[in-house]
Length: 175
Image (cartoon, rainbow, N blue to C red; front, side):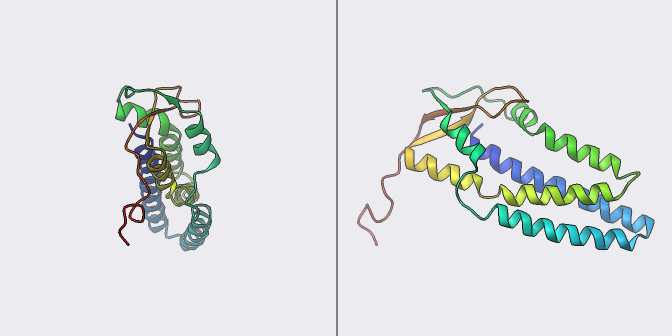
């Protein structure tokens, strides 16, 4: 699996988890007729959007992504492709936290509301990481793939030859 695809999947699954938890919060608040929960959730979600927007405003990779790119080993062949297994092994903390928050909201509805905010922050904070990696791939003429590694350790990447972009429109003589 390409690293940019893992980053996109992380953002989309974080947003999906936040959406499901948000729906659970609204359903719970409606069932309990709890207007305080509605106002608390709406306020926290607004703050979450602001925090996530602030964290994700840059188009450069985060320190962890930079480190993974820098430590990528160069190979001429693609690593083994097991997309579903790879997603599960890399994103299990997201699935676990979402599941725990959903189950916990049965007894404490605020749990899903708070977890929704963290999902929003994560999705918005990471929304431009795939663009940053794509820019590096185009600049250096390589592609980064996720290699099989421990689900508890950092992401290991493999760098393979790709197509190098030579400057863009200005280098080709078109305005």
